[in-house]
Length: 246
Image (cartoon, rainbow, N blue to C red; front, side, top):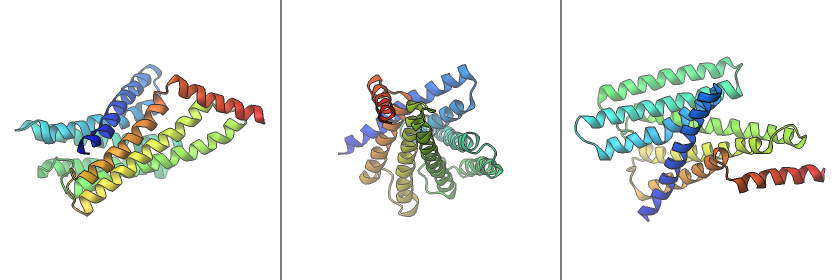
């Protein structure tokens, strides 16, 4: 059973790595901010942040381990701030409140990083106030981003019915919302177990939870950003059928 847990972890790691790099390359070509922010968020929160955390926790030792774990904290912090910035710039570009939340998040993230480094508790699973704060900020950005994506998908659905929105782009908002919600819910359950119940992170049910929601997030990101031809044909076929029925 323990081996099965790595299915979700592996799928999430691979898909997030490919999607993040692809978005950064797209941002480099287009110069567009949304692709850059999502790319940083996906890579920072996913394969870079948590990947380095695992390496620093289990695969390296001596004086190198704290540096690797600290880099992991920086990556996750950068990903979290990037996701909050994406919410501001894409969904609420005129909102001073959302802009303020981005600023406060960046400041709190830096303070948490400084506290972790100064105390020597750079492990992402260390039960500290800095880690708990950083983790709940991450969950907040994922769940808020999911809610905004699904809200925007509903708006795009109405436009699609009038022939004013691309069906694939419309579906992408829903899929991104599902992926972000899965990642946020999975992280919330794991964090509650770790920081509130003081359950060890490598407890089987905690790992199964992370693996399951990681797999759901991976499937959502894969269909949203790496859609196979059959999926694209299905989405466009459904849109054409709906249009012809009207």
